[in-house]
Length: 331
Image (cartoon, rainbow, N blue to C red; front, side, top):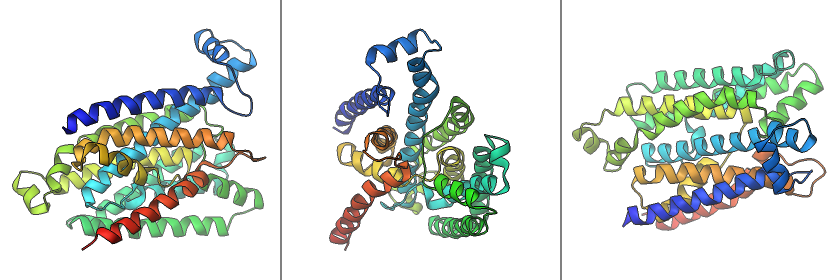
């Protein structure tokens, strides 16, 4: 039954994602026709519509799909690993580490000298945070890993706040603040090519944990009796999260709630087995982020709304509903 329900859901998600991808190429402050987009993709030229599609909107749409899929899949994996419906990709401190690395690039002026310094240092920050979380949580259970992630996240957030507080000039403080709000605007193919290999590698690692997550649903003792190496699973999840979410955050900035929402949106249709949730959650995450990015361009504000702001505004009501629902069903 679950397989029969899962196949139509995957088809629906793919169709909706394709439709939004096309809409993303059409929409913006300068609307383009379907014919202009098709001509730009089929026969590139130096005309303005072709440049808008190929150099601005196409990499932005591709990055939205990659980042959204990353957040959705990481959220589903972490919810399965911790057996906590409120788990999300920032749980292990990776997002905060990526944010600190990117902020340091802006703080030191490297971002001005080298355009890709921000995502590169963001990646290094994500890996450093993941290594610290893994070191602190080694030898303990899931609870110890979560506590280690919370401690690392707090440390990285404190470093980010310190850099913002000690910003050398108002321009640096403004750039840091804007980056922390999260955005896909002004992203180029360079950003896609930098982040994509890490994102894909992380996605493959996270997707490989499906069987172990199903076993963990029975409890840690039962999972070990089935031959699951829990320490290895936690390490794979942490490394996969560091690669994929770290790379995504280093390029786009902090984007919340996608990783929390996506698994919950698809779970009623595929059941509660973690392995069945993974692929639909990835597609739902890509769909949500792409829709949010289109929304930032279409909302009638003089300045384009930051993506992290919009996902926060739309995700918070769902989060509150989820908390109230869990409170009602909790024993």
